Length: 167
Image (cartoon, rainbow, N blue to C red; front, top):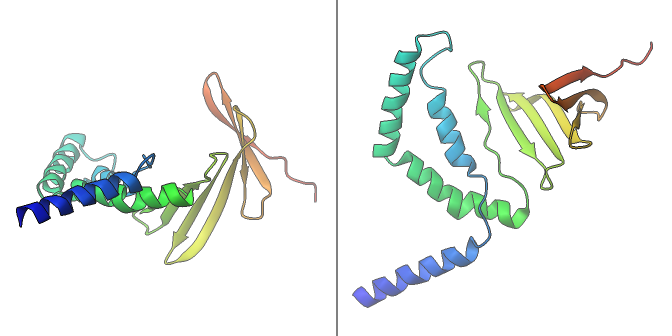
């Protein structure tokens, strides 16, 4: 019986190694859990020491009940493998206090990304970011029209509004 159990464990480890070879991934579930913990504790203008105590307590609860471990395991076994084989980054969106969900999904080559805002399953806004060069990124609306540019300079990133067509 011990030999059978040992054989099963070794086989499962070998299969896991074959399936996840070369697949580091973005760990979207683990990051979503971390973001959830980071958003606990109220508004930014609330006393930060109280907020930090609440976040620390929640972190300990997450550790004791192995929320982080289970999230990382799901990432390694399912989500990162899906990302590796499909070439698409698996994104887990988040919601703010108004119930607006957002998802930021980069393309496989990293040259483009799409930000989608939705509420109650209805898309409110879609914005596309397209890298033109190392220092310029165009911002486009859902129709593909350029609405502005992000310019990387020595002092950070600047926003440049697109010129509006004459009426």
